[in-house]
Image (tube, rainbow, N blue to C red; front, top):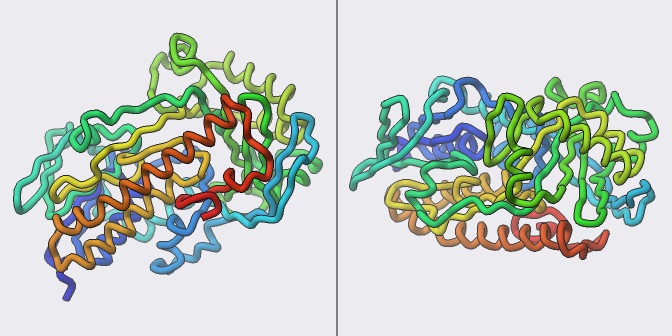
Length: 396
């Protein structure tokens, strides 16, 4: 019998990091409940994920579902100039999934019986025996272990580190997807088997193919991209982040809600500076949206029997394509520490915290450097190995 067979755990946040954590805790013997703030199943807006080993590990090692049913791949990394000419191209296999595809697969493994929607966690307390989470609905729930995986806007981060605040990076990401089948044959020939970059002064874009919401077949496959563009903090950024309903958000403006004049300017500029193939993919996107690039890092990830993981603990701009990998790594290492702790949850969290803090700090330093080089210093060199994706370092 597992030493955790009579233990309970609560995971706050039902996204990819939260579900990975919940599945691993359940495998250890915990009785696990997941609480998600949204009122319905999550919608990742079709965003792409580079599948690094920690992200894919659940499906490689534990799940009956095959990772091959969830991913696409490319054979090359290439850099184009603003006219569409290839300035660097190298063989490098990367695999990808879409946020929605991966989330639904994890949720299918966890099930919905103990996955509760519409509960917004706003605080917690604990004693020697249990931790209790409070929800804005007035509900409370208690367990032996409490894990917050509630994302970059985590309201509980302040209880771990009162000084941790979102720091705007100085640029935004225009994101979107377009069906490959809707692009011209000439464009598909350029971009469908590669991670494609266009690096221009004070900006860059990358794109790659991901599964469609209906599956992996070519009819539904998508091209996913993010285009990084500088916007000064202040009134211009504030105005840009007001959506069509008059609402604003510190992290994103959703598809269909970006003011039309900004979308029109973005499309016009894409035609002028990104080259024919990449420009066509961007202009063909029906509902591009905005991501506000920010960094934040908590100086603590464990307090007693309460843990903070993923973007809730350390969120950074996505140049290393390591956000979901970091959340998954937090979950796997937490499970390993618990397994080695002879049932002592607080000791396990104390053992687990230091290395994950170092990992988050190292990743944050690296992506900040990449962002400064691409957006402000103009020192990106196509083919530079420092530009490679990786959670633990370039290409790792």
